[in-house]
Image (cartoon, rainbow, N blue to C red; front, side):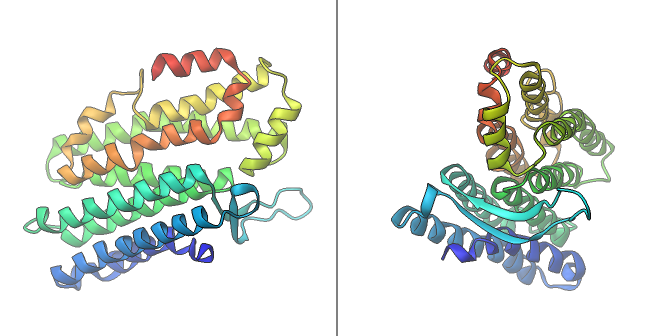
Length: 292
């Protein structure tokens, strides 16, 4: 059953592709069946995977599924893998994203029934869920960043879903621009981690940081601060919280998805996943407590 892990983020992605290419020509019943059905199937698979993992934990209480080697650089020791990583933390987040997301999509099938752009709405929502799943299941920080940016793009598209209203467009632009501040800090943090540790594989990053960086060192503080900057932007914490009230400009189910299952929880997940980096910098831990 663990071998089916790849289906969890891919099924919503398939729904997005099909709806983006042909959704406008489909009857609404087919759009909702596809837009809700494939993410719901991913939720069922996620639950079965969680049960299997709990009943027969793999060695080390973690499981990695390598899909392919992504962007190998000839002559350089840089071969990031497009791999999915399963452990207790990612299982919890996977279940939250798939099940809460599926329930929101099911509600949306009736809530958005009379709206123009019905297929476009479900395409964006499915891409949103897929991006969040790649984020929480990523083993490599590059894959995590890909999902991170996908979530940001989808939030922009969904907050501005009713784009004929100028206020909605302003709200979408504000969310996109403000979160880019945090994303820039996160990206710089990735460059720092790779230049200092020579890898972006998450377990290896945490292991090398614990071995090579003294507690309280400047490099540990800088890395933790940059990662915190990314989390602050995505989770709408002070001082980058201003975009979140305007996110209500989108359809109500979008606000539910942003608050409950995707964007706002992404920053919390990042800090939990990279906890070793934060334990090496007591000063940054104090700021984490301060901003919440």
